[in-house]
Amino acid sequence: MPTNADEAGRAGVLESKRNATRYQILVEVADRQPAVSQREIADAIGVTAQAVSEYLGGLAEEGYVAKHGRGRYEVTKEGVDWLLSQTDDLRGFIRHVTEDVVGRVEVETAVATTEIAADETVSLTMRDGVLSATAGETGSATAVAITDAEPGQDVGVTEFEGLVEHEVGSVTAVSVPGVQRGGSSAVDPATVTDLAEDHDLVATAGTEALATARAAGVDVDIRFATAPAVREAATKGLDVLVLATADLLSAHTDELRQGGIGYEVVDVGS
Image (cartoon, rainbow, N blue to C red; front, side):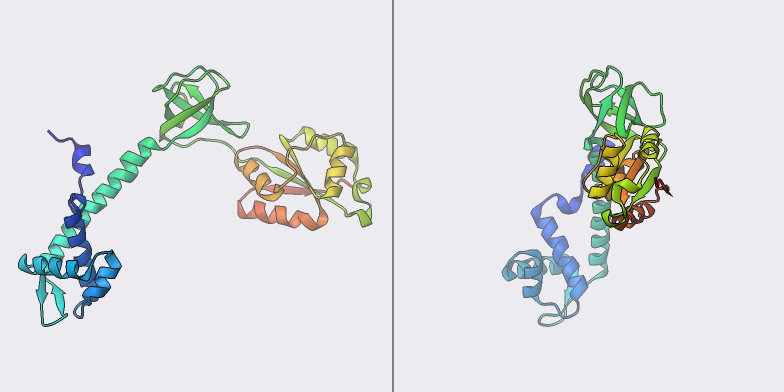
């Protein structure tokens, strides 16, 4: 006995190449009627003009199209009904593929926080900016593991349900003067050090900004493509301190505004 999945997996128009071609030709006729060029239809669907002529003859015999002189065709009510029925089948098939098939095969990678066995249900959270999986249904978002994993290992997960809850991180931006205006020497290194301790990541944009971080004894996590990287890190729930030369700061604040990420610009002049 066919299952619901079997029924959903069928689309009459896709059962054979003949059905698919008839469907395509009927759609083209409906779109171009009453003056129909068989050559244009052939070019549009990738068959020969002779094949189009033969299919049109068959569609006319079935009552799906009516011919009104040379090169003039019209889709009949029966043809419209057949098109609609086939289109409904296609919609159901597409829904089945997108919701049932693709939903099952989509795989993400998480870091295991506990021992996990394949086929086990896990809870998903965001930790330190990384998707994390914990054995059991303890959170608002769950998935099914497709691999075994020990704590700290990567694990494949699929069949997602719910939303991964996490707070968006914040960004503190420091404008570092250009070298003509003092560069890193114009910034208080102790303040930068204190700020860095309150953030998960430090990013620098511009040579003066990098020199500022080094003068403060701060390790730099992000040095290149910093504007999108800072936005992405904050989106994943990390707090970021960004040191940027004055001419580069606006690129970062623009990126943050576009991403709906809150930020604060602070003055750390020496």
